[in-house]
Image 1: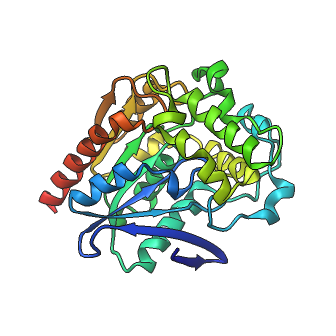
Image 2: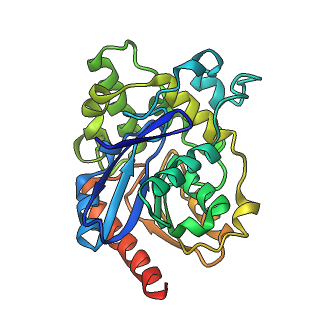
Length: 299
């Protein structure tokens, strides 16, 4: 698998489709790896005429695990409770993670790309649009937010399995916990472990597992604050896609995000929770392609 290094951090990536096509960069969510993008989504975007670039965020997958930060990494539940104290002060930020994506574009010799971000990846995409707008042809934000939802805004009893630690570090326990987490946030209409991102759980933990990396990414996300005021100055064509039954990031967050960005379009998806279920992938791809095609026609 190809990789490059930025400031001592190794980033692994993959590319799909023709190198001559306009690039679209997919930025994944909390603790996710590039293998957890549905192949059908990648295939649809490539068939639509785009060069699809995926990568493992720092602290996930085969990209660098920043184990030297373990001693200062807050506990996941403390982060959610907003009680991590002074721990985490020197941990990386979403701006650092956005800069990783810019470095990837530089490495590939690309002036810019369409940017697609899912959940935490959507927050990283927003940082790209805020801080590196000239590198963003367009932005598509999937199931994400301008400000991390407070615990009371989530369906807390439902979503807690997504954040829970596995009872042990063996592959079976880690995979079971990961499937249970995705099933918890997928909503009532689809079973993630059968048709959503939960079906990649075992493959993901066999490839790489990094509980402290999950915590550090969560800390970066929740410590980024409210981006609403900054987003009001963003002039990147934006599509916000959000599930109507998302228990982790309620659709009100998607509505607020779309409202913060001038000209942004909101596309609510019925029956979709915090997941990419296979029966909805083609619909999602069609919305994304329509958005990117329209932007390309104007460039």
